[in-house]
Image (tube, rainbow, N blue to C red; front, side):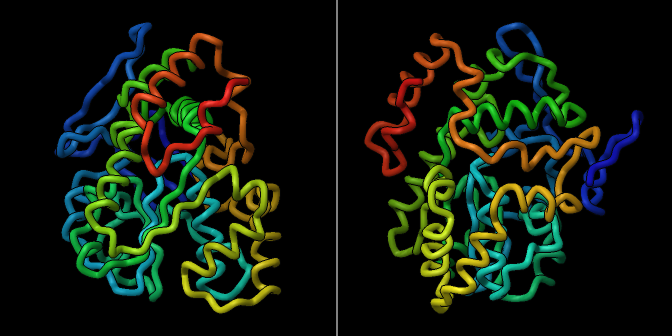
Length: 315
């Protein structure tokens, strides 16, 4: 869980000490349309959350992967914690919740020694763009899993995380103002659209690297099929009993309980497993916001392998 002191410059997440505003960070305070500031840091031309230590960002490009590593490269709030649990269970052959916070295996959060100590096969996860992934990914041709979710729901989820975690972001604005920061790429990792476009460019340049795209809405609709697709990609031998048990264990209602001790909590509230639904954006968007979103989505993603018609449907 999360704890912090009023005068503290750091937080503790599941036993992991996270230093905020640490030395070397190029702090940036982007302002929304109402003048409310959102705290980020800039590293190598990219916006990142101040949650990340510069030393950890610096280690990513040179990080040594293993041939059997699974590199999980999804953007924030696209169902990465959920997908991580599915993969972890499949690789271990047991429908048991991982007794660990996903961030404890995340490139931009922990040091190399921690990741080196993990047994194979490892799930190395990161929210940084594939263009900033370890150089070894090209050499080792590790399997890549990339997650997609309706950007409107991603925006809502990121806003709620940024508000509940205001000790990190210092943000107090409303959703409409945050939404336009999101559209403009003034958000973590330069925004979701940039993240998807860079992923596509990377994969086009390296077509020999195996990749599986998992779609949040499809996973919600048919969890068992999602588990079976992941298993096939990961090379897990077919085991109907295991697959059914994993799909059952990974229901949102069960994960909220099982991962309670291994998640980020701000003021006692679970900030990672919030709702686990699709379409919550309908409760947040005005007609004007929807119109602006559809215009930007089509401008940014038209013709992309990641473009999905359902992501531009009206209410």
